[in-house]
Length: 180
Image (cartoon, rainbow, N blue to C red):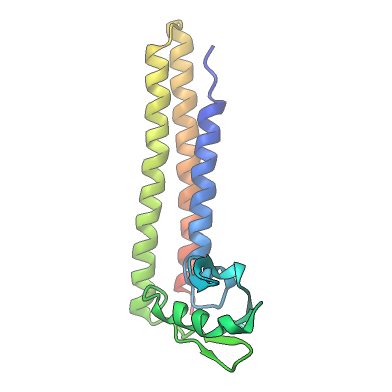
């Protein structure tokens, strides 16, 4: 008998990674996850921002970063400013770092949708690769023809279900990005 649960688990992992990637996409509103990938040099090593400071959203247009150790403020500010992919200009007052989130232009929104759609395609390719692995297992397994066909149909249905889920997540994110 063919067990598709292993492949379903792998596809679920792809969906979870995709959702995490979508959380990082900038939509024009301040969100602490925007700074997830920022690394700060603190105590002689590079650390994720969330390990050296508390990041909160203030309204929809400002991020407020409160360092655990005020001596790291300059490094936090520099790390955010140096990350060109963010395009943010933080300022500090010696106690906290304020990061204003500028409104997105129409052109920038379309560019973000385009890069996000590349992540959609990458995730779909991962799902299809998992489907191919399942199909290879089905072909090499010593199974009766009807069980093999049923297994292939089950894997195809899983693939369609997960790619539809990716499309749905992307449509929601696209609407959020394009909303002014």
